[in-house]
Amino acid sequence: MKKLFVAWMVVGIALFGYALRLYPPVDNPRVTSTFGEYRPLGSRGPHFHMGVDFSTARRIGIDIKAAADGYLDRVVIDKDDIYGYVVILVHEGGYKTLYAHMSDFAPAVKEITDDLEREFNGERVVVQFHPDDIVFKKGEVIGKSGSTGEAMKPHCHFEVRDEGEKVSYDPMLFLVGVPRPIDERVVIDKISVDSTVMSFVDGGEYEFKGDFPKLEILAYSIGNGNRLGLKDIKYYLNGTLIYELSFSKIDWLDFGNVSYVYDGEKSRMNVEEYVAWYRLYPIDMEANLSMIKVNRFPEVKRFPDVSNIKIIMEDAWGMKKEAKIILRRVEN
Ligand SMILES: [Zn+2]
Image (tube, rainbow, N blue to C red; front, top):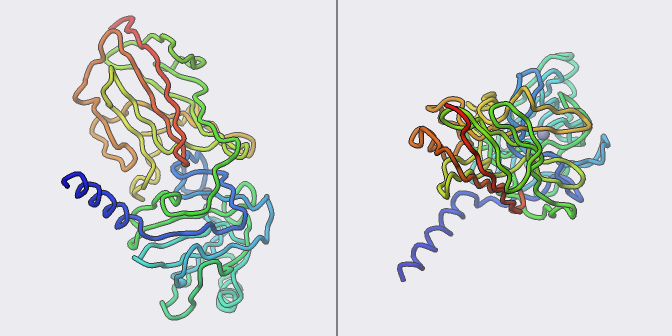
């Protein structure tokens, strides 16, 4: 009986938290970037990727559709910002969906924005709508794909925010009908201990200095031929979970705090490749970031001379990979 009650509570929380069901904003959805990825560039500086990218087969003019029933909250036209042409809808529960890099808006929206665009000629325009103004049904076309803003190629950037737009959630928590990539796999490619980069060998032994190893990993998920950011990384020291990075939601106050999670010296991104090095240690013991779910480094203080490390990585579709290494202290 008690068990059943607990189970109901868990279901209740899950439903309460993410009750909104969203459908992919493009037909034949293929995810090309995941939530929480590292973005080294942009007019706003290095930052976290606050949404999911869907392929539009590198084409401009593909239909972008409302992910659920809702009303138009606002439209942003800003060629100099990272997002370019943006549509933001409001749905049940106050959740908002955002669609960026668009090339064009739906006719009802265009009637209003075309005049403003001419009037303000290249300046940032934000048009706020009233809930009764323009309503969209799930699947209705809200605009066309493009590469406005700082998109390296045409695609649809899709975001989910809370009512106050204080946090963005991983859209995968809400999305239904996004197929798993057929080539899906989780990869740990390289490892860095105290700034020495080495190939990763499962069960391998690595040396470290000082109180704890400055451990970093080059790890990712493969999906549709792309390297995708991971959803979750758990780090165990001698069987105890001491550090966890988890990308379920990111506070907008943390938008630029990428250096806590990624090593900016080693990480990079361009059209050809996405290389993201995850830091598996806190650069600031007191830091309280939305994606650092567990940090027991302040309690552990000093690793044993021989430390058994287990790392469990998980991707956006829940595929897991476990890696084990031994870290041996060589000097103080
Ligand atoms: Zn994006």
